[in-house]
Image (cartoon, rainbow, N blue to C red):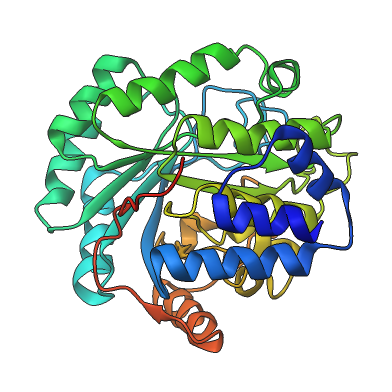
Length: 346
């Protein structure tokens, strides 16, 4: 195991069988995390990039079996923010909180068509901020329009590279279509973000290894990884939560194989473990996304129950994030946090 970890740290490559061996071995998490932390320090430095998260709509046309926003969840109070409300939150995040990136996230809400989204993008870009969208599957033409309006990054998690598993838990959706969207995002000139869910029922260690190799294959610019947290109003209500330690290991191995990308310490990590984001920062993560959505709406953006900081104000959320960052001897970045590609043997 030590030799494999050293190989990953030095060459940023592992064979599929080697990844599987590391994922299966329960005794190496600390060593993998430490190696990922050293690689993070070498390639992206000690700065943590903060992205202001605005959850602007919880309407969704999809019916994913693990997501609280799923179309058939009739217990959820639905909301959508209008253009002015979205801009005002973005303006506060930039001018009052000093954040350099806005992340607009929603379910796949068809109300926000291409023209509406482009108008919102153009308005937010007047704030001199980077802009990330996380709004689901779109056409190649729509991604191109978003880019022309000013979109810098797009997050579309593959969730799992196991096609049968994907289509079981994302009914009515196509894995090939998901994969094509990632290609279309890249072709549009937008930074590509993806990620996976760790702990889906039926998911294997082999498929998690394939996820990591997939991220390397597509040369993703940012990867978000989190454990499954079971929602009581979904078909997976009787399943077990994913394991925090396994999700952390998948994240750390992703850092080892993709040393210069951006990796967030996700809120799902914090939800399963009180020190989850801190441990993620110590295992390769270099991004945190403070939630600046108004608390009156934040409680309804329930992808999973128990999300950390749900009842915090934006300023309290930011203060909490700053404390975590300084507690591990890191500092907050003062730039927009684009991927800075570093030459290494890919």
